[in-house]
Length: 421
Figure 1 (cartoon, rainbow, N blue to C red):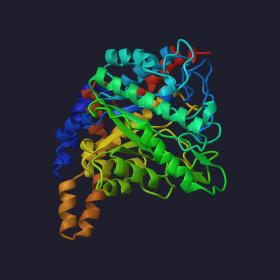
Figure 2 (figure 1 turned 90 degrees about the vertical axis):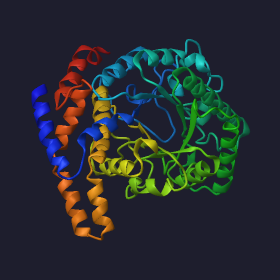
Figure 3 (figure 1 turned 180 degrees about the vertical axis):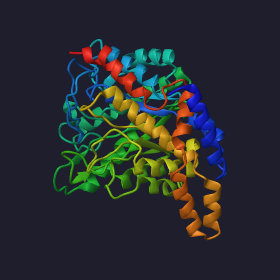
């Protein structure tokens, strides 16, 4: 798509949005305030690099597919991330799991330190990409029982408490070095396949374990702690210790950041509807953007109704001041770099749609009780030339507009990932 076509299309779109009181220039200036924390685990199918040939194991999650070209090393993963960043507009972050450290010699998870992640920090500094971090409480022998922080076995529990403590120290060190607070997220797979008699006991233990994990204070300028719930997992269909209600209460009473993963709720629940309720009691939310298909399957994000509604509500509820947005999907059945770019661009497009909503007119119609006018405006907004504004945003950030990025991904496959055997 030529620069002149993009510019002329944008000017026409600008006029149409202006007729509904929408300032497209303001939207284009605001969207960069939403850095997306891009998940490291799409590149290698959640295997990590603790040991050669590592694969995802346990924890109620799984990746499916065997499309060629997955990253087999940290060097290849970084190469893929760098390619992705050339195809998405704006400056973003990288979200690391603890299992993605550089382990020149075996180090168990209760002994990791910033040493295993200094290379990532150096790379991030070179790329202008700040890092976020996650404890990895799965794919480990001490997670095979199905319980980690909520385990009734003291040895197992203490191992994972120490792991989370180490991860928080790593995240804080990252925040100091990169001069940008690292969000450290805790998600655990704890639960049971069938009836559980002592739900109360496991949840009491979990609360106490989390308190132990968070006992040491870190400057929030360097580290922000988050906790993430789940509805169920493979092998934990009947009971999950860290439910939404558990973590909602924990986050509010302990002053932690609550993470809502779009795949961790019942299919009929609206994650978008939860935002305004929770923000009555906390200042900020972490969102993991995903696309569940019938279950928590972490499909690649596309611009579907759920993403549109979530993004619209993000903007309506305060925008970047109240939300941190991260991605969480993994698909091994298609080109992995293409999966990344598809999901990131779709998330950004949803946020741009939110910024382009004729909010002033919609609120006026609602406050005056004119339900028909509000409905009519919402329908009219759907037909506005959003794509022209998106292409302008891509051009502003020197990334391919229109469908140009698709051939870039295919070319990278021919030249790089397709040669990985």
